[in-house]
Length: 134
Image (cartoon, rainbow, N blue to C red; front, side, top):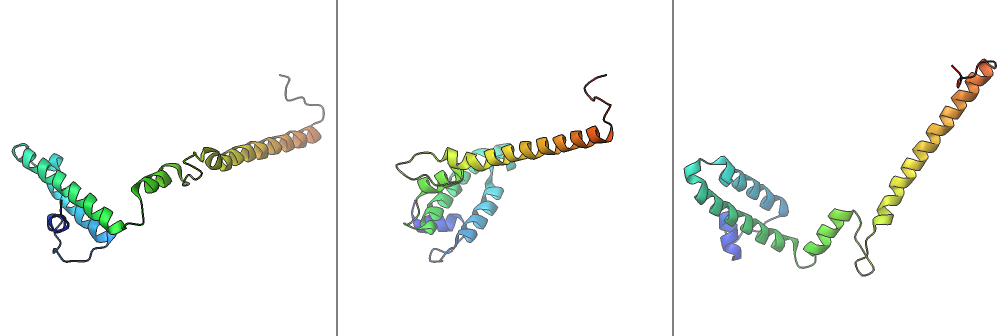
């Protein structure tokens, strides 16, 4: 697909300078208009082909708007794992899991400490009562 064809499909003049937000907004409106699930049954084949063309134009313009410097593979890796992997593509699972582990261990520790303090307070208030006996 050529650049001017993609621009015309999304409703832009062939020589316009586009931003990511303009491309996304135009794609959203065109996709809403031509989505195969939103048209009558008799118009579905035409809508499917038009929707595919619009999606292809969107991807083409989106790649061009991001520029040469960014890579789609790096972008998806950052979104999927939360942290870009370095050192020959190794996963950073431990780096992501450590804060979660600290939160869980800290919560359990604080809860246990509070339960112990409540037990000691009750023990001081009622020394002859054993909470573990019926």
